[in-house]
Length: 166
Image (cartoon, rainbow, N blue to C red):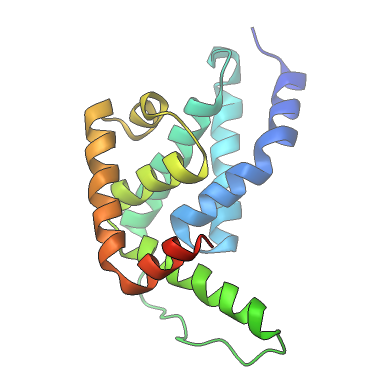
């Protein structure tokens, strides 16, 4: 049986990683913070029933909550296309441009493919855990990853970013 100290330790150890994962899913830091808080609150309610490895359970809550929010989100506001000028060095601006190109390419993927790519290549989860989190078979995880990578390879900016290793 798990207790409050276990949960606190888990949150201390995993919250930064969960936040980065949530950001890659929703592409907004504020929403990512809300998503992580919601996932952790739901995990707390079931913490005594969660097994020895809570990661798959929490990641599943995270992806399911994101999908639920995405289906219900209000699409009335449109973000600006460009940020104001900044005094960044050229190398930093190039790195930011590469990251932004990858974020846009990820945003263009369907939600399930994006979740598979983020969980596999960012969170370094094995296909079996991803299948449990996303709610599909291991073969579907592999096919979704393959299709997502094929789409990313077709995006010139994403392809350039993958080749440079940024």
